[in-house]
Length: 420
Image (cartoon, rainbow, N blue to C red):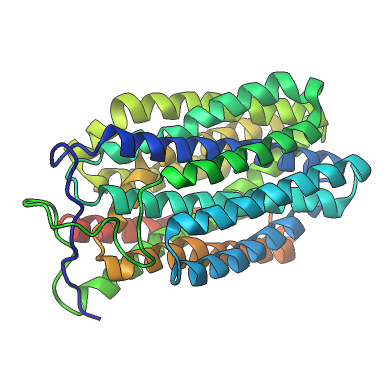
């Protein structure tokens, strides 16, 4: 497939400054979808770990990963036929219905492994859809601009949502109850449906508002037949290997929290709520005051390479510590590196997709982030299910530490190619 320069959106004010309206609407989308995700994820993890137990965690990890692959495949087929905005309307209507139904079922079957597992699975589906659609909307809207700051400003909606949701969970979970929180999540889904009518328009498989190219805007990557496949391969490698590493770290983190808190439900809810709130405070501050300037000054390469390097350092620590408290602290730090991932690494990765032409960008985002990534999570989760009992914690840590090496190499390749 040859690569051609596709039309760039005409900037609203200047080459470096999209309109405030465009940034504000996308910020609202990031806020609402992330708030729903944080609420459902914290409730799903806490209820499952406390009422079902960590021993059954690999089963629900596999179920959630398989479900995400299935939903992402449907999303890919849908986006080939209708515009992303219409896909969002359909997806979030269904999420609202599912959340409302599960809240009703939880009232009658509050210890059902099926109901609790479905709440967990639905949260993971949310996370995937959030990533796919936010990346698609941002790359369509901002690829005609040289600055990476719009990416970080829109992405700031997610940590702000985490702070608000964390406060609600910390002080409200014990009073309003988890059933009402799921109902609030359904309400947020309906708000996303309403907001979707204000999102920038785009045709299925096309760039947003295919207007005349802006003079001086960056062209689509490459002009030969071999650059694009290689670039997409390295992009896929970064995302797939990151998914493997984070799935293993996430499993160890959840086990560590369950073992330290002894499956105490309220302690787990408060811990996850405080974690999300504090990490999101730092992410928000980074995205507003630091991240955009750093990406503009040093490029996306430093962010793409720096995150796996930091995880490699925590992997060394994970193979050395032994006490339950030390393990909890270490894996809380490893998860706390989400500050770097979400404020710097993820916006940099989203902008890396922007150099693809419109013929391949939408499909690449859905296939790589929505299908290849969850398939990697399925395989990793199956490995955990089948072999976790055979490996010590240090053995699992050593395993994901080794995956960081090719991840870093792929990040270097993406950095070099996207900077051409």
